[in-house]
Image 1: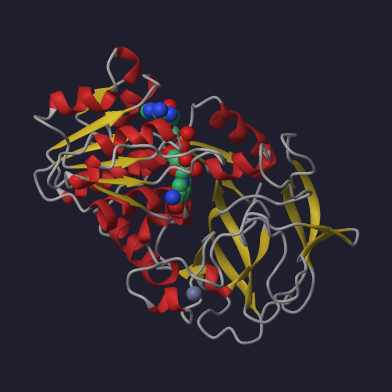
Image 2 (image 1 turned 30 degrees about the vertical axis):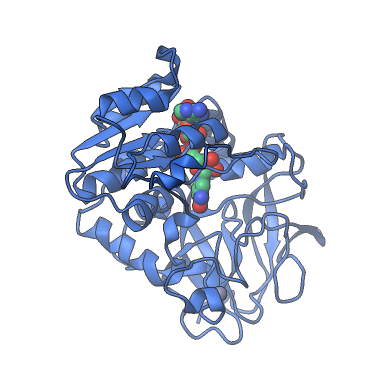
Length: 380
Ligand code: NAD
Ligand code: ZN
């Protein structure tokens, strides 16, 4: 048994003291796991847009000081009372939304919206005792979405950890813990394009390109990428995107451009932008009779979706998804196996790499729109 079991661990973490200010590498104390909790040594983490969004804290409840980070891979150090599915040494992916396996959602085959462990961005403490496991000189540092992976050790509810194949390279599969699985699942589990179909992807960031990867895997024959940033188009070619449309290059609405290109509309569309206008276009550009649009992007607080009800009567279907409809503990290990069988490529998403002491660079790359995924190695 490791000598740290049951004791406080001191380690490095990147702490966000204030909204929008560079993170500071601090020595933090990480308390042992309580009932149904697991302490995990984070090996590698990646930066996702959601971290940046809550770090900027524009329009949401600010919770500071806080340790961000939710896309990661690590190794179980110790487990709390009642944890039977994981043991020290197991390899895990933390997930911002959990699976308790007991609630109505977890018991339903159709849902991944667990009642107990569904994402809660306002909560900065653990469920068990309403307190944080992180501190500096006795002062609490708050958690983020139950994962807080910008720390060399983190305490996570067992329901938010997927146990994965120990042979899987953590510096690759860490990106399956959020963005890539979301996009992939949006296409494979929700849009379900038939072989040979035409799929439009709105937004060619990591989520949209994962949705494109899903379309490629499903055997789509045309994958049309839509983005306002022409720089994204070169990158997107590596992901099987066959055609590009920049809405800025056209005078008419992009849904009309797509309808002309596809003899009436695309078979499936997946929206990965967070822009409500793109959401409306993504719905209206699908073919009547059979077209299905899937919304993935997170809109602004006051946005409203407006479309003519005739679109529904004309048999266009609108759906939305959370984490690509994957149940984190049940399904993620299988997504890791898709990578191991080389059915899914992850290397091309990882455009940058830094060590923990340089974590602010990862924020710069993302803010400048240069990176798809920047991974952060936690040992340096
Ligand atoms: P990203 O910023 O890297 O990519 C978004 C892309 O959309 C950019 O390239 C941008 O130029 C483009 N874009 C913006 N407005 C557009 C418009 N009107 N028309 C066409 N293109 C437009 O972001 P990402 O990391 O790929 O994430 C995409 C979205 O998915 C975000 O809103 C994120 O919050 C959301 N997300 C949702 C879930 C979920 O479970 N539903 C999970 C993770 C991320
Ligand atoms: Zn549940």
